[in-house]
Length: 293
Image: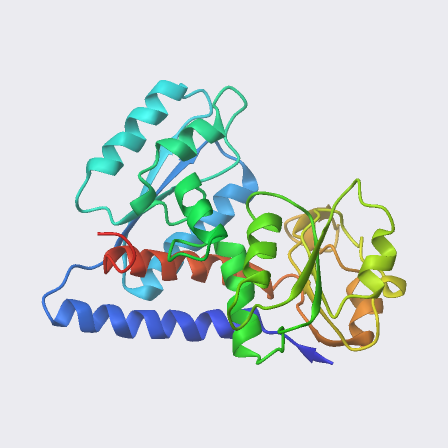
């Protein structure tokens, strides 16, 4: 069993990005600039945005954080999105989700200029991904593809089960795994809460990508010997032994599943660091105008 070390891979990619940024700046080019809008004080979002700011520093990017209280109006938020769309110094920006219930997340996502949509959520980027055109790819699926690539995990012709059908992970992940690419070329099944024989589907899978948001959902009896298991889950569960009072738990019951696997990602330290570094890769592409002018 090989443990897939997302922390080490992400550190390596940050170094690669930083070296390229220094070359760009030395040649008289512009330092990439990522902006983030954070609404309210959700604990998970606070941590995630703080990690993004740190990652920007490590990559040599300029970063801006724009904060709003949870009672900000939808109109005010959309006004700020338009301002960032027009700001020539901002190469890419994100609006941290989830947003308060009185704000339409879809409306906000669609208001972002797709050329600056480094989260890869805009319908234009999603559509381009679906037909295999260059685009900003959603960060978590992109990070998983990078892990598969760097660990030389064979995907061509393999049966891949994606657990979960969210717009952020499940759907784009399935699309990437079936693309004519390396990694890719897999036979993909997407399972969700209404799937029949979900256990049987998993038992036949060479690769399981668990993004269902239920702690310890994938158990040893669902996994065949030698499978590759990628755990996207990060649910906070109470833990009195931790200073924070909680620990992060994956969708996979790691201790019992790991011995059966050829490769497996831990939680934390697997997919999580790759999500942030994928956002950095998209920001570098935005700064270089590599996809859209």
